[in-house]
Image 1: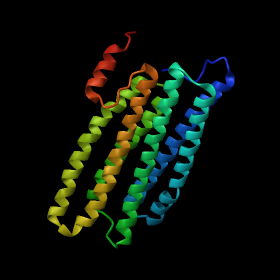
Image 2 (image 1 turned 60 degrees about the vertical axis):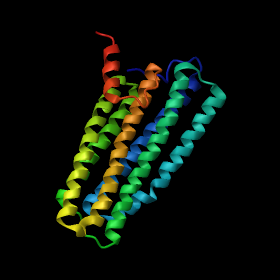
Image 3 (image 1 turned 180 degrees about the vertical axis):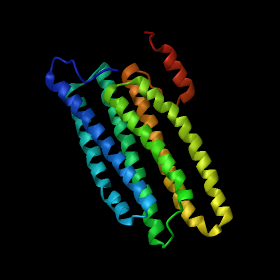
Length: 244
């Protein structure tokens, strides 16, 4: 665990790097709030809350633009090298991952609007159980990845990789269960379709937490671990960890 934004001779350089990471973490807080608000709207049948989530999507877009400006200025003015360059490049990718989270939260909000505007009944608690469980898993993964990013904590990033495996298993089980509702009552097909889209969005949100964790490994180790098998990666990085 370390602070990679400190220690330069030029104090303003440290401040610019720290400001960029703070902006990215603030963006993470916003998209987490958006996700929870969208799932809350789905669970409670609150169409106005869903519409507020959609209205706030522009706030995410503004933060993306601000981050892009800061990244461009850092590269143009400071010409970062070594770990600083890795940090800037990684944060650029994290911004893209968080933008996708914001978009997926919007997709969940649209499912609420579609369900309620079509006059469908509020989904039963048995159906919504899977949405609640996936929301918990996905947002915990994203929150842990953001905490790991704040502290450049590779061990915490590895825990996110492990959770990604659990998330995949949970989404498979949820999809199988949802199909049983359609078999029992074909009139539920429209409702179930919207819930499938919402759960796919939550799965994507969890995946973005795993993608952010990959960038933490890149910052700390200088190793690009995208597209690698997560289980093998966890074992490899833990074996390389120094003993105490």
